[in-house]
Amino acid sequence: MPTVLITGANRGLGLEFARQYAADDWKVLATCREPQSADALNALSGNIQVLPLDVSDFLAIETVARILSVEKIDLLLNNAGVIGPHESNFGETNYDAWAEVLRINSQAPLKMAECFVEQVAGSDRKQIVSISSRLGSIAENDDGGQYTYRTSKAALNMVNKSLSIDLADKGITTVVLHPGWAKTDMGGPNAAVEPVDSVTGMRSVIDQLTIAESGQFFSFDGTDIDW
Ligand SMILES: NC(=O)c1ccc[n+]([C@@H]2O[C@H](COP(=O)([O-])OP(=O)(O)OC[C@H]3O[C@@H](n4cnc5c(N)ncnc54)[C@H](OP(=O)(O)O)[C@@H]3O)[C@@H](O)[C@H]2O)c1
Image (cartoon, rainbow, N blue to C red; front, side, top):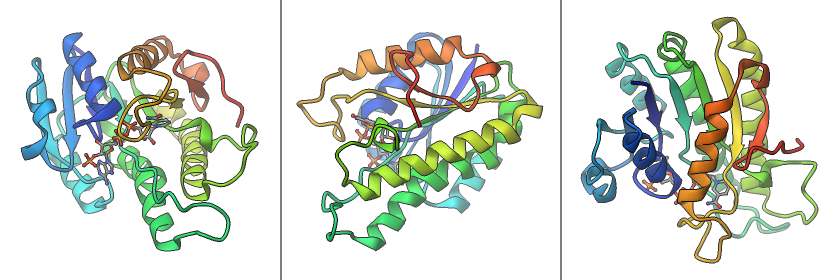
């Protein structure tokens, strides 16, 4: 039975990943900031262990990695993310909030990889997947603005590319995925894609990954996204 470690598993896409992998008989290590109030996650059935983890707390990441040191983690899923303040247009930048968004969206996935690399390397599948966004594509930015979120995901994309080179010797495949505009608290009620379809698509992409594709940026439907 493969094992997945998910950040931000209490709601949105992280919760749907936990639900689908558990239903598919995976062992699910589901982390979230407040397990005691994670009702939907706690109600899922299957082989699920819920652990507290705020990914902006790097000492906490080290602690969880020590607790899980004997696990073989087939798939490390860096899902937790924040959109940041809505005032991220030119002239409205909140620089302190931007720093916090960078810590959660860009730095924490690298810290997770650094702390869990041996558990991933010791598994069968050896995959690290981080949920990025098309908004982090420089090539596809044709309407400007959103400095905070866009830069955080562009930085995550670069983290992913370097990871793919640095961890190749360990046989680890690492990619970034765009989940589509998905109907979650972040995506809002008018979003185009249901979480169940977004996650079904991403799981299919993850399932078919080969190490030759390490470092790449895919949409949930399997198409490539330009950097
Ligand atoms: N929905 C979309 O349309 C869309 C599009 C492109 C990319 N994405 C990306 O997809 C991922 C999941 O987004 P979503 O749509 O599911 O968003 P969401 O519904 O807002 O859920 C975000 C999740 O991240 C968690 N989180 C935030 N900060 C955290 C922290 N410091 N430590 C641990 N967990 C933290 C939240 O936990 P709390 O409940 O504790 O806040 C929540 O579980 C994110 O990386 C997002 O950027 C989403």
